Amino acid sequence: MPDAKQVFSEIESRIKAKPEKAAGMNATYQFDLSGESWTLKIADGAASVSPGPAQSPNTTLIATTDDWMNIATGKLNPVTAFMQQKLKVKGDMGLAMKLQGLLQ
Amino acid sequence: MTDVSVSGRATYELPMTQRQWVRRGELLEAARRVFERDGYHAATVSAIVQAAGLSQGAFYLYFPDKKAVFAALQEEMATFLRRRIYWATRDERDPAQRLEVGLKAYFEFYDEYRAWNRRLALEGLGIDESFEARQAQLYETLAGGFAPTLTELGVRSPEMAAAALIGMAAQAAYWQHYQRQQPPAMNPSTLARACACLFLHGAPSIPSPSTSEGGPHA
Image 1: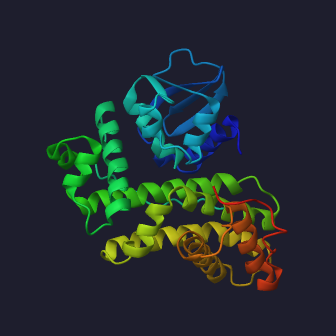
Image 2: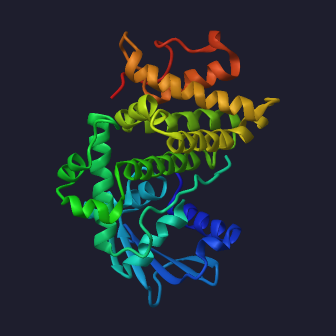
């Protein structure tokens, strides 16, 4: 089972390999996962990931690390997770939904 | 293992609001339950909206017809399966072990969504060419993911072998859930080991149920 860092690194490298996936996106995501935070910044078709909270995130996703990993690895449907309140979103919901495409 | 995307065509153009995203998800989930219960041909839009607790009008905001919602489900489930196999195998260095954990992820998925997978096997290829093409694309994508591992294992025709591997896994999963008469059933780990042994070393190498790992099927 991968860890959260590997999943974020994967998003980073996928965008690097296919910048069109993030074309036109300019967003800062914060992930609050069981007490640890991660920041994913996407701008001009490039992504960077760093541990810790963002200064002014557009979207914050809150979940347990386990639930987030299950979403990222295809074991938990993100809509189901949201409906069951396993995944909470603060801020721009549209950006949160775009994340689905980046995970594929 | 190579991660090759299964192309997904949005049936609802972005941007969606949160409410729309959830509604669409509810419809997909309800549709899956109805297709699993009634089959594609007997399922109706009325049954789907009833299962979702939504109005008929709400359905048509997201999908033009039954065929479209089935297609969207087929794509969503393919994405989940592909992502599971990718993450299960991504960091496994030993190719034989990678083959086995990839098969295990496949069988776990089949196990979890067995009714859906049965419907796909029975009806998915007989609906029309677009469904067949989508299913063929998934198999091709999965095979493409396994092919580099088979190359590492010294297989000389990895593309053909990977296609055969996926076909074998699909048939083994169907046999396990719908044809096998004698208990105990094999769990995903046991089934994956048996398939990996069969594929790499031939049928005599399949561990007997008593010596293989794993207990009865959940």
